[in-house]
Length: 137
Image 1 (tube, helix red, strand yellow):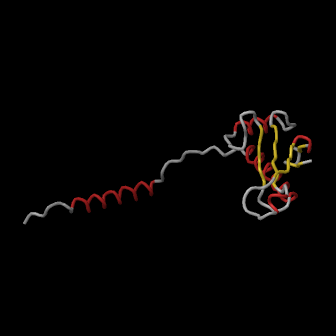
Image 2 (tube, helix red, strand yellow):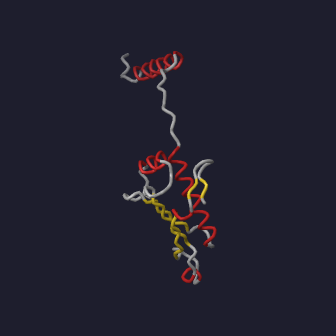
């Protein structure tokens, strides 16, 4: 049972974990041991609340397929157990990041002081540029 929040839990049956051989360096051992973990999670078929599903499917993330399946590959660690825990943690983080609602930006007007400073620097810059012309004697 994967705990997402206080009231949202995912049964282990909904998360498909497969052990695969890791890529990259590691000597002869990397060719023998399946230490990497491939995680697949089907969003539409899951028991997540509808709000969670909508937000996850709306994400433009390369880890989510067009069918709504999250695919994560964990191969950072040397042991399968650590990679399994890493994949589940990353799945939890992805789900939690999807449900966070960003605050709407409230547009503000520039302050009187900032307007004055801007005009002063413009005038100063203009006078510097005006002094660049040819000098008549």
